[in-house]
Image 1 (cartoon, rainbow, N blue to C red):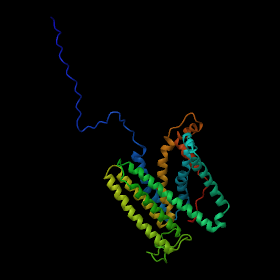
Image 2: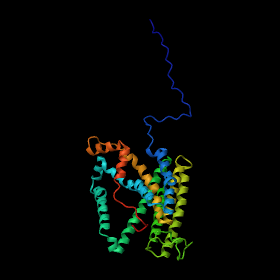
Image 3: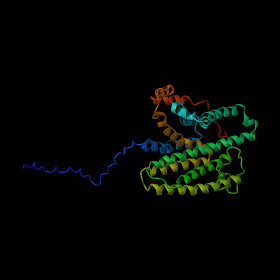
Image 4: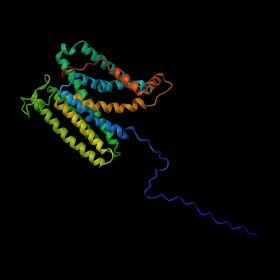
Length: 346
C-alpha cells in the first residue's frame, strides 16, 4: 500500500531579537505630540521677561524717566494683555459655552458689561470725590482684587511649569503654593493701605527698621497696625516659600523643567516683594504677568479650531491668519486710558 511522502516540518519563524536597552511602546499606544507648554520657548520667554523687561522698567520708575517710555510699555503690554482676552468671544464654540447656562451668561456677559458701565459711571459722576469714604472703600476693594488676580495667575502658571517636569506633585503641594501666593497678595495690600511704602521703613512706627521714606499717599490704617500685619504676613510668606521650594526639589529631583519652575517662583517672588516695598514698582512687577498671559493666549488665539460654517469663525480666521494684522488691531483697540501722572489710590 503506497504511503504519502513525508513532508519536513517548517522551521518556525522567530521574532527578531530586540536589545534590552531599546524601549518599545505598548501596542495601541500612540505617540502624543509635544504640548505647547512642554516646549522650551514659552517657559524661557516668561522667565526671561523679568531681566529683559521688569528690571529696565523698575529702573525707569526709580529714575523718574520720561512718562512716554512708561506709557508705551503700558500700551504694548498692559492694555494689549487686557484687550486680547476679547478674542475668546470671537469663536462660536466659546460663545455657545458662554450662553449655555444662566450662570455662564451672568459670568461671561452680564458681569463684564456691568463692570465697564459701573467704572465709567464711577468716574463720570465723581463718586469718589463726592463720597470720599465710599471712594476709599471701592478703590481699596479694587486694588485687593487686582493683587489677588496678580498672584492667582502666578499660582496657575506655576502649575504649568511643574507639569513640564512630568512628575506627579506631592499631595498638598498645591495648597501650600496657593497659600504662599495669597500671603504675597496680603503683603502688597498692607503696603498699599500704609501709603504705598513698606511700613517697616516709614518713620515714627514702633517696628520701624530704618526711617527711609514716608507714605506716598494718605494711609488708611495706623502705622503700628500696618507694621504688625506686615511682619506677620512676611513671616508666613517666608515659611511658605521654604515649603514651596523644598517641595519642588523633592518632587522633581533635577528632572527637566525643575530649574524653570524654581526660577519662575523666584522672579514672581521678587516682583511681589519690590512692589510691597515701593508701590510704584508694581508697574514693573507686572511685566512677567503681562508676558505670560500673552504666551498662554497664543494657542487660544492662533491654534484653536474654528467652525468654517460660522461667519464669526471665518472672520476671526481671516484675521488670525495674519498675526501682524491681529496684534495691530489689538494694539489699536487699547481704549482711552491715560497714564496716571502721580502714584495715587486710582
